[in-house]
Length: 72
Image (cartoon, rainbow, N blue to C red):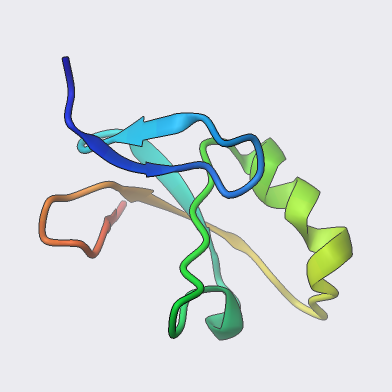
């Protein structure tokens, strides 16, 4: 069984190291205590109405053990 990395910030699905994850390109979603991570682009898209971003993109990454997912 794969080791847990985090849970999706929208649907709460468990994500594991080595999984493809999505992050928001907006710095306030990835700074300080708030580090949003999503299991699909659909979950990322679902956070946009409450986040009120002007210009955002979903960034595809791979969950790594060093804490910073690798960009693809």
